[in-house]
Length: 225
Image 1 (cartoon, one colour):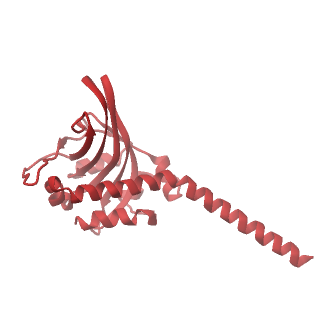
Image 2 (tube, rainbow, N blue to C red; image 1 turned 120 degrees about the vertical axis):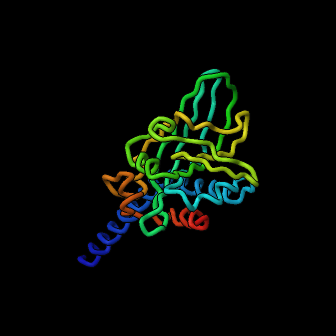
Image 3 (cartoon, rainbow, N blue to C red; image 1 turned 60 degrees about the vertical axis):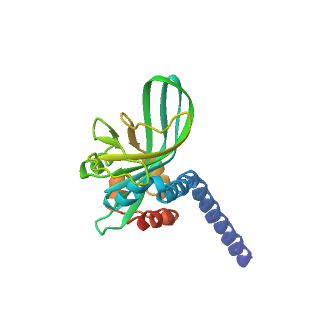
């Protein structure tokens, strides 16, 4: 009787562990999907012959923001938005992260149609990086932003906190991120790393938590030096 009770208890305990593990995996699904998409987008940029400037200068960046899908839509009044991940160069020179963010901007002017852009932004200065450690940052206000040069032989000395590159399909030829507000997604960070509370400095400066699901993305970024 005692043996049967222990067996049932062990089975119940195992089921509880499996249920908890399954719930955690399900909760992390959205975050991991974004990380995987970011890895695919970064790989696209690193192979694109028109992104030579980005490829040559990514090694100088303090941090890199990758937004796999920025949706831009509107008629007269429009805007764009999506989610992004940010990785930073740690004190030992290795990339750490990612931390999760939302990206949103509003624009006014004649426009029509819908497009989806994938975007990689190089954070080139300490000012730019420190602004990402706050709750939110407005590009063009709190930190300067410039579009990166595109073309196989593009050469330019650009001075800005954030330098953006986008690849778009649709009516829009790309995204102007001036006026964009980048906000930390602390709830997504906490779900992905299963730790509370968790703020961007914990991930990008102190390099505390790590999720193995980000290893491929870090490896892709590391190949860019």
